[in-house]
Amino acid sequence: MADEKKPAAEEEEKDKPEGVEGEEGAEEKPKKKLPVMAIAIVVLVLVGIALAGGIAYFVASKLVTSSKNDDGGGAARYHDPGVFVKLGDPKEGILVNVGGVKAGHFLKIGIMIELNPGKKEVVTEGKLNPVAETKLMDTVLHILRSEPLDGYDAAKQDALKEKIKTEVNHELGEGTVYGVYITSFVLQ
Image (cartoon, rainbow, N blue to C red; front, side, top):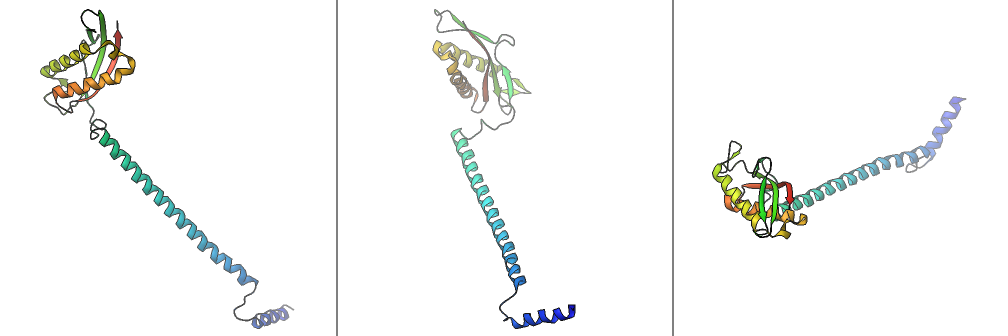
């Protein structure tokens, strides 16, 4: 009986026109389209990721470049580790009268200055040269004495540090001071 069914199936296939396929052929076409669609979707996703990465890189590089230009070249932001020097007495810091001689106000302040180790005329073997130390102390004391009392407000501390940095850099040479840090502050 199995032999009788076989010729009947063959005759049915022969009777169908060549362009028409049976149910089996209809199932094969969607299978062929599915991989093509999947490949197209994967390619589009990869292209999208590549474009997003390129745009992100472009934007990030522009932001870094613009921040360097705003910073004066970016030298203050990226530098070798500096040499830290505490001004005044190692324990007490600096004690100075502020607001004029008759004002009767005193400021006890601890200031650390980060210096460029590449400036050999200022820093030798990790220590501040005596001539540079004298100029540094004179400049800082002049700034502290000449600052009005309201200039010592906590909100104006960053301006005071920037003023010290600018004046010391002017006195010892540009790029000498990386940063100014106030470690203690008592105004009486």
